Image 1: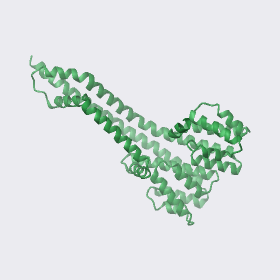
Image 2: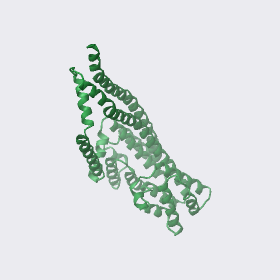
Image 3: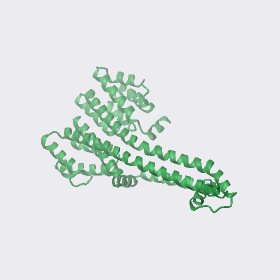
Image 4: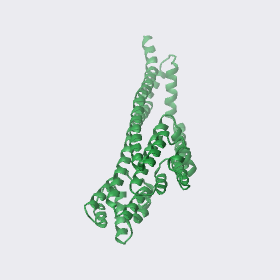
Length: 354
């Protein structure tokens, strides 16, 4: 049962980064792999990672290579992770490879944290707005509605609209089917996105969406540059590194493009040449890749470009939040102003009659 739940839940990048950093430190200190895994299996940073480490320890004790044991735990260890561990086994520099991998995971966690932090504020404001609206429509407005029914005055359009909205939101015959329909729609949409075609279409929508599409594109470029540079630094051949990077991409469109680029590499062309055929790879990136190929410093150039796009993502997220904040405050002000107008206009008219 636990194995099924593990495969349904996503692993924490932070927990995986902590495990990798600790394993690298233990190996650098001369502690054997089995003893290192045994010690880390007693940690409790993340239950899912802990269970995977305990299984790794069993498999390695039975003579299985660490990379192969990690392949059995594919719900925890990605193709990028397994490829780098295999490179460490071949080169005999496992501690250095794991140290590099830990740095990669830490930067990946930081990237996700930045995106999450930027989206938290608008989400919190939206949830609070919905909660306040539901509270008003269920507890405050009904009192005023009963008051308006008992007086003989012409209600303005704003008050009539507010009464209509309140009745709709408090009517189970309307809200229950609406909630069920919305739930079914979201479930169907989520299920469709998990299909290969749906995942590609959703990835295309995210890339082409106004404002957020540019940020999402830069996040994808950051992940591409950092993943590929980390794999190349670990001594993994370019073609295999490119295919592994495609597996690591969250965006299906970008993953397909990298697969196409990898196919072109088999014909003997350089990496920068097929990248020029796709607008998803900016000209600056392709030029820097070409320079890296010519100078023999492709991994270093990709690492610098990853840092560049990471900084670009951070600036774009800050700009987005600075724009969203006044817009959402203005929107909430409009809602509050409309409610006050709808409630107090008839009250003011009633007072004037006395």
